[in-house]
Length: 136
Image (tube, rainbow, N blue to C red; front, side, top):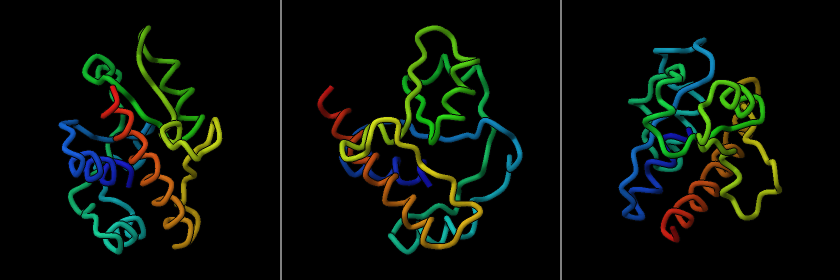
């Protein structure tokens, strides 16, 4: 969901930024987006149909300026393998209304309402990131 929203928000603001996503594990590699996530995005005007899951490749650190993670577990996992100077941050750190250390929960085992809540968190962080990029 975050990849789709970030790409849309940043493009709408005229920011030329490449956005992609990957998990720290390969459990769903090659799979399309969860149907509930896809439906939630579609209900809000986003198209996630082209998304396919991938696993993060450590070689990508050299190719990316900023790596965003949803939670502390992923933050720790990537920091363990990151080269010095890699910029890895929690996505919600860009949401000025979110408390420090706020995470985006995984709604996979929950219902539709949790997917809606995650979308709202991601949209707020995406707007904050867009403002950050515009200011810098």
